[in-house]
Image (cartoon, rainbow, N blue to C red; front, side):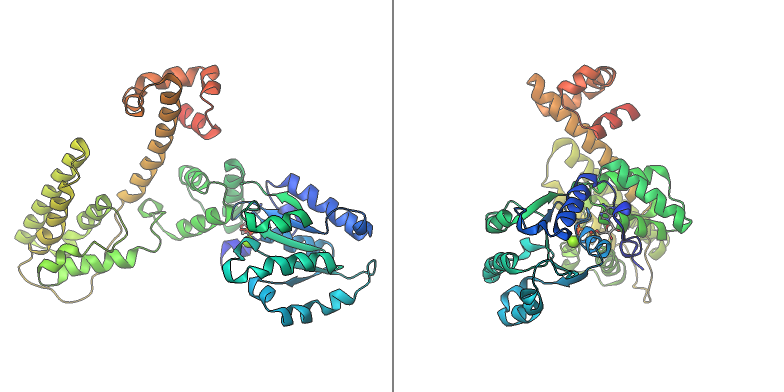
Length: 396
Ligand SMILES: Nc1ncnc2c1ncn2[C@@H]1O[C@H](COP(=O)(O)OP(=O)(O)O)[C@@H](O)[C@H]1O
Ligand SMILES: [Mg+2]
């Protein structure tokens, strides 16, 4: 079972990091149930905010806590006037102040586009006529097309879930699952989620399935099949010019490709083959180094030739059969390292901007700048460093 489903919050108390939104929702319901609806300005709620912050969950909780049934409409229902009428007939015939116990939910209204344009107008009318509260959700409430709805709705903003809250949720879930994932990885999942709790839970569930989490690549969940096929082509088919293009449609970087090959060569090749293959690999690595040092991207072509044709041609014979290839252990380390340099870069960028030097120079002199920024909160403030950036500095 998906953890996002299993740990879907079912009460306001279980929703994390959205205190202000919940307060607004509660006061809306209260006014609604007291029949003050005609007096209040708005008859609907528009919950808006980034993905994975609890919009859909909150809509359902609102229904549950008011003992209401959810009536869900999607964009195509809105286009289908007949169906809409049918669905809404009871609503339209209800008189206000009768306990109606229904909430109309239109999830992801910003999904109404192009052909469904009329949906917005329909929805607008619906809000005007219905005696039921209408809850809408959207990622972006400020698009032009939603302007008519904004006028009708109480806007409730959902925030990105702060990194420490995300991390806390992850820890609680691991406890319930009786699992252990090391703290660094938790921190990284939480940071990488950028406020999206759904993404964080999915990452955590994936990583918890791996026996040795250090072999996991967080970003490549769907890419394995491609790389497996590419490796099979190189190791197990006749070497032709076609092998040169084998990585063209594999959605991973050349650096990672190299790691995959390095990790798996020895499962296929023996003796002299192995020596030849490693030779090709090391030449590819040399070009890689030159590319980094000299920013001479043309060398990518050579790197590719060695990695594909070079390694493929190293074999003396084709060995049939199925080999299951291994994910390289170093991928996660590379990913962690990229996370780190990302912070370094963003700090250097802020510094460069403030003192009018190039970003490159700021990066180069980072060793000198770092302790100064680290030890001086005033400078940190002046640079407008984020909490995460400061955490990063303090960890160094
Ligand atoms: N604020 C939150 N508190 C607790 N869990 C959350 C929160 N936001 C998201 N989640 C988790 O992510 C899942 C997806 O949330 P959902 O409400 O569907 O997000 P949205 O509709 O904003 O994209 C939930 O089932 C829950 O597991
Ligand atoms: Mg949703």
